[in-house]
Image (tube, rainbow, N blue to C red; front, side, top):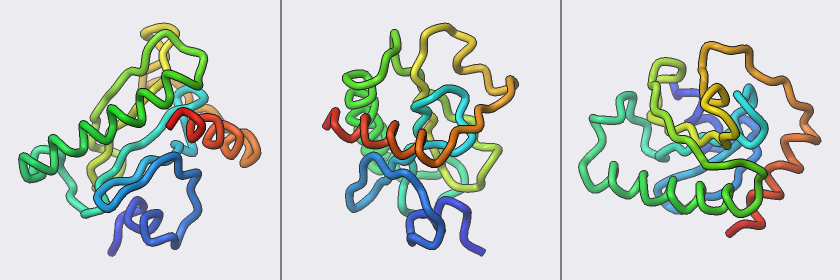
Length: 130
């Protein structure tokens, strides 16, 4: 069965996409730690980040860098934090999280519940950074 992220990539499930190319896609987390929390995902379904081919792993990080720079330009934050947990969805993904404090990237705290309108507005804002 396809992962949740593969279903987003195939457009079977909706997502607020902020960037995409032939290999990767970036979209807003629907249960974010903070407003603007983005997931960067390879289109090829691989469960564990260190199972990616070395060139694919490098390219994933370069794509994430482009997304983080767009986020940095458009969101009010001190930095963009990055995390790879790999336990929630069996499909490689990098979390890009706008940071004001170190607690903004604390995955044990309650997630936000944003409206579809808030997600759409945030995605549009990030897309302006490219």
